[in-house]
Amino acid sequence: MNLNGDPVPGSHWLLPSAAPVVRAGLCSLAQPSLRQARHTPRFLFHEACLLLVAAGRLDLHDGSHQTTVDTPSCLLLVQAHTSADLMKTPGSGGQPFRSVLLALSPELLEAFHRTRAQPAALPQDEQAFRQLPLDDDLQDALRQVLASVPSPTLSDERLRYRLMDLLAALAERGHLLRRAGPPGTASRLRTLIAQAPHQHWTAHSAGSALAMSEATLRRRLAGEGVRFEELLVDTRMHHAMLLVQTTGWSLQHIAQACGYQSRARFSERFRARFGYSPSALR
Image 1 (cartoon, rainbow, N blue to C red):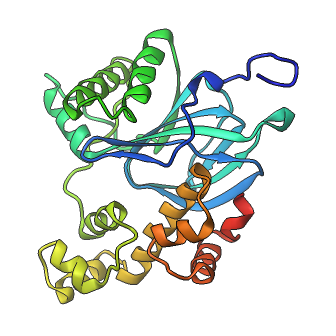
Image 2 (image 1 turned 90 degrees about the vertical axis):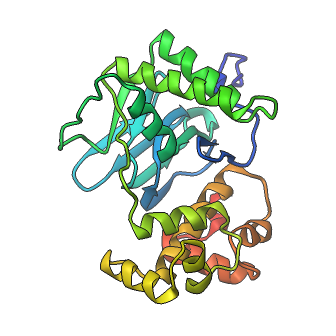
Image 3 (image 1 turned 120 degrees about the vertical axis):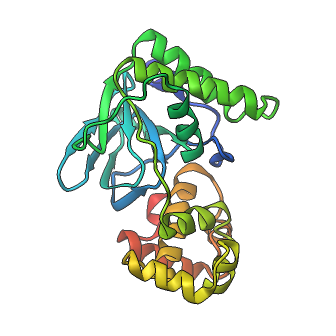
């Protein structure tokens, strides 16, 4: 309700505030919230995502395409590995910016594409992100998924069916999220670190987890134009950005969750990556 007692547009989409929920091999769910307008440069959507703006406005620009989402009656589809500049602006009347972000695992998308009798080939110029209206049927499918992801009593098998139904509803409307294809070394490394950003990662330990030597890991990353240390920090900072916007945790707690014992060092890394300190988001 707002100050006049009227329902706040989009509020029916919001679940109880909580840290991001991860259902391994299926999806993850986060609900970012911001009270001040903030620009996030080069934010990487590592996995394919469905994004709904419950309150406020979101502007995205990937260098060639720009879009604005400012209503909960539309759903934004974002393809995996999309890097875009984001601008989040709170709503009128003092309402914070609120969104719902559902990330879909590559394994889930691959399984969905295998179930299609005649897999549709996406055009090569498919946009990295696009909007579509939320009709009643699509809303129902999305609501069921959003309520299911954080449920501790719902099995992964049943959640998979509900996610598949949501993907089928999108496909019926002519919208397919691309199958990721074989991941490169950088993508595999980012996924590994994202699963445990608090861990003390080194090139040696990460290489061992990926079944290769440190030298092989660094050589393959160099072939993709990536340095281990830079990817490690960037993955942790993306995780930090979500935690700052979705939890009430102290910055010290968030720093530790991202692998930093020093809050000052964590804040320094965050500022270097995004241009402002994590406290500026609170």
